[in-house]
Image (cartoon, helix red, strand yellow):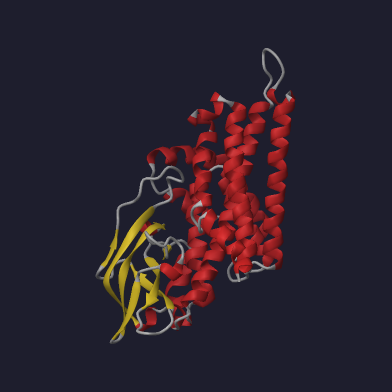
Length: 366
């Protein structure tokens, strides 16, 4: 059943999403029809309620297959999983899960996780959004930047620093509904790539939420934030690998064409060497991701290594391929130039590459 779902999604990606991706890259709109189709095909059904290693690998395969053609659609889906389904399933109280989980799982509602801020990025220790304890609940004040799925989300998970005097920093994650007073969602951002992914900034102006809105019912924000980030990084790793695979497939198709005069491009040694390097790096990135997923998916350093490897490879792969195929790759109809633009985001969201390098190097500084 699981393999059937992966096969169905791969078939849908190859037959339908290749054309849809071009259209939505031009119009920069939310691809509602195709999002709904992925839910109907069971995009997340392998994960919940049985989040086994094998089922998670099937989900990552779905992300990679969609990313062969339509990385922005993969971004929408991985955001729904790592920023909404995962935190509610792992940390939500029974009441919170009953209120939100099934609607998120079936696509009736979308969720968003708001951590990123203008001056701190994804470093939660430097965030300025604060939560102040008040009678009956909490009051949230602050601003969040570049929040994926925010324009379409109904439920938001807001990361905040707890306002305290002369005590160590404590963090919390709070559930905020779209319509609550004092909560503002900015205009949808225009982006270089993944244009169908809706992104916006948020403003919280003394937003009141009840005690029951604290995720998990306790101030466990640091663990929750780190877990959400880790989950997201694994998904982005699969997305980056999918982008590289999609670009490689297109490159092989082009360089293998017969030419009226002279050799095929694939018959040139330089072409063979460059594509061999790409194929080797793809194999290594896949092997690293699978190793992390099977052994220790909670290890932040290993996950950081996997994402750093895959995102760097995606950028290098797409840029190498456009240099191989020349003017053909620069034209919009063949998708290579779009994959170049889409690849860039994998080194930015889910924590930037420099943030990942810092995580990897952290043990050496102690």
